[in-house]
Structures are given as structure tokens and as C-alpha cells.
Length: 350
Image (cartoon, rainbow, N blue to C red):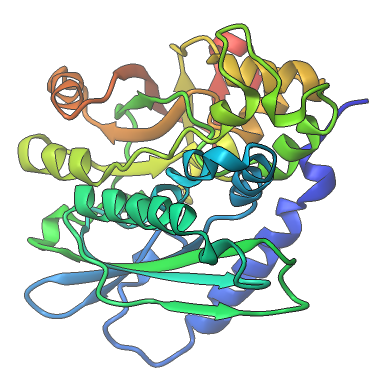
């Protein structure tokens, strides 16, 4: 039986709620809010000589995979939590960086159904090391945060992880937003083998159909659980390197909504994807066991492209990406036309 993410999480409902919230909250009397940032990955405020950007993000249910695996393989609990803090922080830090901000602060929010997991020093050390790695790589600090036990709202032996980040955009010309995207811009994709933290409601349901659940082996020898727990990369470093050296118009992390995120700018433009890598192993496995077509995959998961750079054609972008430890491909081009993403290699229009 097909496993459709949309049966579990209705993005149309969430989007309507978010749009209504943005409309309502935009009526507040702040004079410093930069209106073009409403609906972007982070919100921007004009403080005179520079901009400040803020963002808040949740991890979602990826932590439940780590929890489930740690209960079965209890001698190696830390192994499964070592990337979870990194995931949680990078979900916010990457969105912050996407508007051109240099993060300087990240505050985690850790809530739980009980305190059993944080009694385990190995779990705590692994979790905190992940937060530290992400924030340190982004050039930020963790000055504080919040923890709490919320019994009867959060399940026992589970964590709910979220956080917020703050960054500076200076000079103001580094501010990247959808209005800067124009026909002729190229789309450069940064490849990844990680699902990041999206689609995990379906990923967890797929696990329940596998003989060994998260410990089911993939052709490479990795377990299904290890593959989906691959940490989310941090993109703050490459964003800053690119803004220092070349002209950039926009950035977009490919998170919830998958490739629909590429058409985030609220303008009638067509994003023509001409080159795409083969789906990495974990995405092939997800597609096979979810029994869904290419279009649904591309609308749900990043499918191997974690971050998209919109810029005038420039081979230096690929070079800079390599120096920052990323593989970049020239995926396609922005064209005049209706607001849609055409993924030619898969004959899909989103």
C-alpha cells in the first residue's frame, strides 16, 4: 500500500494557517520590520546601519528515529543521538543564512515527556556535541536556551526539539530575498545524501513495514536508520563565502515541500531544472517502499539537493562550493513564465 506523506501531514492546511498568521502579525506596528522578508526563511529588521534577521524552527519527528534505535541497541545510544542536536540547530541556522545573515546566536528549546533520556550521560553528551558542532561551524554561540518536562503532552521517553537563531546582515546589500531573483539566473544545487529533517512521518511509517525496522540493511550495508539519521549539513559558511566573492540573488534550503521550495519567490517565474543527480540510495529506498512516483518524491523530499543558490551564471560558484566542502551542480535556469518548477530529467512539473 502506498505511503503518502500528505495523508499524515496536510501542508495545504499548514500553509493556510501560516499565511493567515503572517497577514495578522504583519499588522503590528513595528517600523523596523523589512516587509520583503515576510514569508521568507527568516524575518529581517532594519536597525539603521545594518539588518538583523531572526528565525525559529522545530526539528520534527526525526528524533523519534534516534530514540527508537537507542532502545534496541542500548549499548550504543550516543551513536544515534550524535547528529540530532546538529540537525535541530541547522534547521534554524540554515534558514537564517538563506537571507544572507551571519548567525551570532542560537537558543535551543528542549522539552520532554519525562527526564529519562537526559539521565543518560552518553545521550546528553552526544546531543550537546551536535548542537555545539552546528553552532560553532556557523560562527555563532549558544548563550542560553530553555528546557522543560511536559508530561501528558509529550510522550514518555521522547524529546521535542526546537530553537531560534539571530544574525546580522552587514552590509545591507548582502540581504537576499525573492524580489532579487530574475530571468536568466542560474540555479546551483548543493548535493546531499541526507533527508535533512523532512518527511519523517512517512519515513517512520516505512520503517514499520521493514523486517528489521530501522536496522534493515540497504545495499550499501548501512542500516535504514543510519541513513535517515545522516545529519543536516550547515550552510552558513558557504553562504558567507559566496556573498564575499560573487553576486548572489537568493538562497533556498530544500526542506518541507521539497522542490516546491524552489518557486518560493512570489513572482511569475519558471524554474527549469535541466540537470539532476540520480536519487541517492536512501531516497531510492524510500520511493520503493513508499510506492510513490517521482513527482510525489520531489514534492516531499530534497532527493539529493539540500540547498539551492540563485545567481547570474558563474563557474566560481562551483569552485567556492568545493572549497567549502560541498559539491555544486549547475541545475538549470530561471525563465519568464508561470510560477512553476519544471524538473526535466524526471518529466515532472511542480
